[in-house]
Image 1: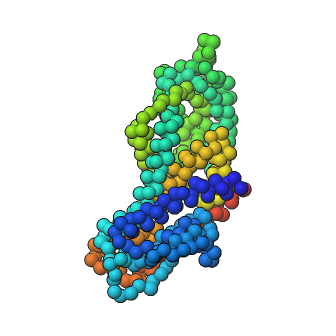
Image 2 (image 1 turned 180 degrees about the horizontal axis):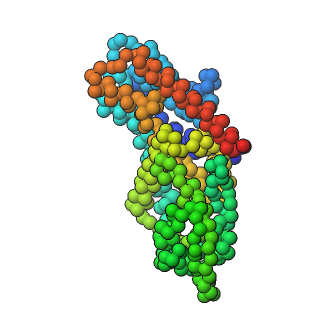
Image 3 (image 1 turned 90 degrees about the vertical axis):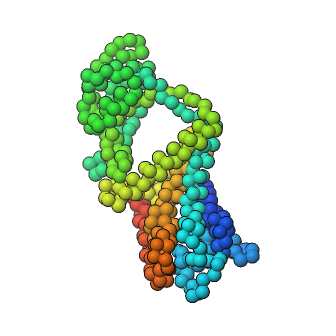
Length: 374
């Protein structure tokens, strides 16, 4: 129940704002909005009310929503278009107006992510790492790959070494350590390799030992790599920041999520990222449940919502049939050739996109079931 309520909370708001963006953009350029639904109106069991020319509704299935405008073949596959083009139709508008309408939902998703991060950073501040390489804490368990490239949890090298809070790292592989950046750069490319480490305890005794680092899986652009991990945490301080610094940091955080997710998408297409790591609605629900029950509860859910909103915006802007980016690609092509594509071609593109989305939805459900319960 916690997972169910959590996923409704973190997904319904980004979807609602996405569709609201389309709605407001359509109104701003005179496109007739036929339907505006929060949730999917499965089997017609939702609540609906028509006001002027627009049918507003709340669908039975909460994880969704859509805006239907005149003169566009969307996921409803409505191909009954008249030969005469009316000025209130999507197809009547200029290419720039079409792109404005199609991108408005994506813009709202990115703005939501920035807004959430801004509120969190402004209220909580940021955490900065102290340069001096003094151990603040030990990660007893870290994640790595097993022989089947599945993620498993093992004891950290620092735990095996017996490192303790207050220890000062002096040297790794004959390299003097002056700060945490030195530690990171020295061990980053030494996953599953032995290192010699020297450290001084809090009571002044110097120790030296060798240990095999753990290779932690990370996404480096479009492929998964192993990063050398020792399992130590540095000392940090909390720093308050003003609203302008919060907005700047939040914009950068959103940008980093978008770039990282884009490289992940490229990794899937290129085959560098195994399909078993793709998560869907059940995987998100599982993570939402964990976030809701964590020590930071609501704050963790907000971070997850911002992450999902950024990803929702990115996915929708990709030139995939059935999504906003697919419609934008058609609009650009039509603007370039100076005429509409035949209805049967646009219908076929949308039908293919719908099948693709249904396939991916089904695939991710089976993948999530395997990853969660397997």
